[in-house]
Length: 420
Ligand SMILES: CC(C)(COP(=O)(O)OP(=O)(O)OC[C@H]1O[C@@H](n2cnc3c(N)ncnc32)[C@H](O)[C@@H]1OP(=O)(O)O)[C@@H](O)C(=O)NCCC(=O)NCCS
Image (cartoon, rainbow, N blue to C red; front, top):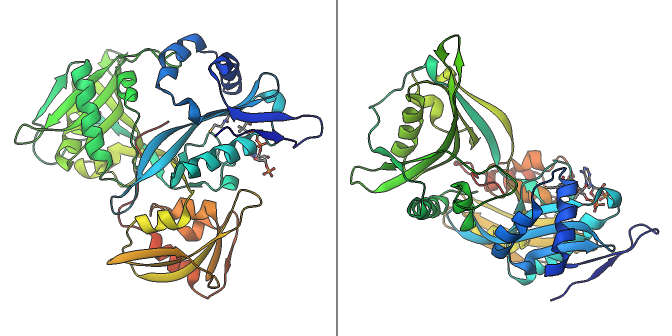
């Protein structure tokens, strides 16, 4: 399908939104890097990374040169209960500063959402550069994240000393092992997504990436009692001395653990490494075990608490029917379509621990809400009663919001360790 949308948001400008062609790419990258205020080597990006792209998923807005960029890649999202839904991962969203606030982003979103629905994708998902941008398009913050910092000089660890850890060489074999371990891990945790295969090569510095300096660091693998690998940690370090005292820090860049033993062992191993004063990790979760492993739990601190993955239910009944529910509830939801002109989706959600049906209905709604609020609450971690505040709701039956809130919540909050 070739979508071409003539945008006429402003009388002074018209532009076309369509999929990119190979010869658009230099100007497409110019727009992308200008809007992101950076000047990486775009020729290197084009030669190294573009071969991994599906150009059907790469959009541009054109007013002569490229004035807007928008790209997705095919992924999967693990939802409560373990189903993996086809998900479109949105990235590289920019509009040239000369053309901002004239509806170009809105036009690109409409084009790609239509294509995504045609491909049968249930979910669209992204990381938002700024919080106010995406709610209007039906996305809601579904995963909460935090950064952990451990003062390794100020605590001991409970439990047995570390066993089962060794370093892995930085090569294709380790890349494949990491990919396999991550695949096994992400299917078991709601909120986690399938990574692009080439991302593991990038992470290990086996491929050049113009946007960042080439990775240099270490990978350690943990093996279970039977000798089978059940986790890895990839990390970097900064060597530092103060007044003759070692104050070096370790930054965990990726920690994948299939067992609590592996998770615990990695933190202790890194914290007990000689010369290390601080170990930190981004993309953690507030319910991480770390503080509970320490003789002094306050040696660990969670900072930077905020949104990570934003979720948009492109197929509302399909998405609601695909996850599991820990409580019982039966209600009709009317979900306002955020893409202007669209009809609201009205579905009856009849769910409980023993199963779920969710089908379109003509019955009058119990609760009308915005798609972004439902996207936020969908993975079970964001309270629906909070998520509806931003764009409002209508409760047609008393108690319907509380019922929907309780129905969507899960004991285990979602987490997402993959940034894109
Ligand atoms: C964010 C960006 C893509 C928006 O593009 P745009 O073409 O100006 O957006 P649109 O004109 O289509 O805006 C659609 C709506 O979103 C609003 N909006 C867009 N960007 C916004 C922002 N950063 N903050 C608040 N509102 C924003 C617009 O005001 C408009 O509101 P409306 O629905 O009331 O009309 C563009 O400003 C940009 O490139 N920013 C720098 C790069 C970036 O942050 N990208 C996002 C990466 S996740």
